[in-house]
Length: 518
Image 1: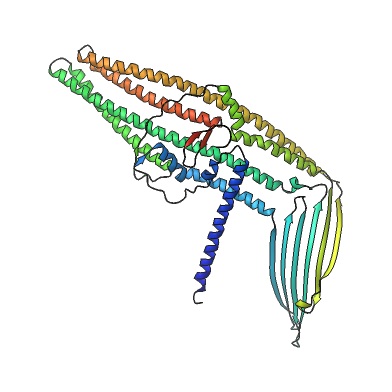
Image 2: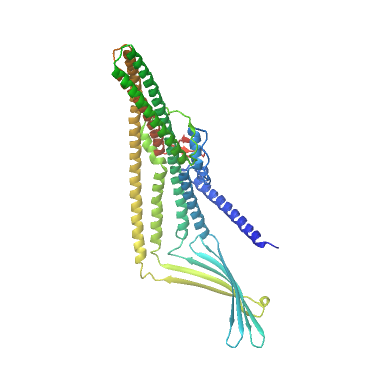
């Protein structure tokens, strides 16, 4: 073979790729298993957690809608990918802990050369293999074997070799302190619980990310509405200036009206330029949050959200939040975690009583490898450590009690915080609902005022200053209604999140859910 190095490198790369794909499959399988076992976590979390948004930023589409924005943000958002990476690491941590409780293999090969002062040479080779595993009862079992050869070469040229091999099976089992599955497998149990908490945290982070994308898109619609209203104001200012100039030409309006209308048109045009610049910058910043290229500016299509009826029963919303909020469930589950650790710390106050047994097959003096005759030896024993000093164990029990008390206080605090968040969200939503009604009425009044001012200006009863003020008030009323409508819808979505009634599909669609999995 003329070029072995490239082939070897290729094999290494292929092995690495296969290993990476296998790890991805194990992570997916573990996430699916944990989600299926936890009724609090939506099955949509699986697909959301396993998307990969790394790589080159794609270009922005020509047309950006709310759905396409949510879909793009779900797939390409860098912050969301950071959240996925944290969940991936948590899953990898669990897989690593689980391997520690499986069969652990080890092996060594060695060969040592030496030369004595008389010129004789020695050589010793050894091969050792071992396998061990922690038992569900808290003990461990190990199987080890070794084989080796000792060679010596004298000055007379005579070689001598001695072969030896051994196989040993050993079982160690605690009977009091340290006995039982709960103590021996605590690290595995806690790692599994940590992954459940990470999945719940990711589900909430995914909801918060979707709400942020939704709020950002609505902000674009709001800015676009402001831009459109500003353009209307410029057109109206232009018409007002033309009418003022026409009336002045026939001596029906003073020169101050003409100057005022010209100044109003210039101010409106300047405001339009500023609004257009703000709109362009806001679009590009939103593209950055989606993980898209900011070089091309897409057209934004959509309408300011309509006002949806708010939930009617505040007490029902609080009760639902106390039952279905994922973060509250995680805080509640940490109480039994602390209780479990307290029970385990108490178990270490018992005496250390261990039993062990070994079976060994060995032969260390054969002249050839095939001549070895393995002899059996058996050994069993009991060890008891006198509990003369258990201060560390008693301190551990005290600390575990403190941890349990802290977990219970954290649960009470979290329940109160959830109640407060829901009540606060409900209060804000109720206020915004009233503001929507008020701003809708304000638009109607402003429109009537603007029409009346224009008619009276045409008849010569008012100056154009009154028309300018009426048009500005109408513009402000329209902008205020758009802002409060957006604020109401965002607050309604946040209320759904706070009561555990929100879910996000793999394509980024935000949906309202009922109890149980979706």
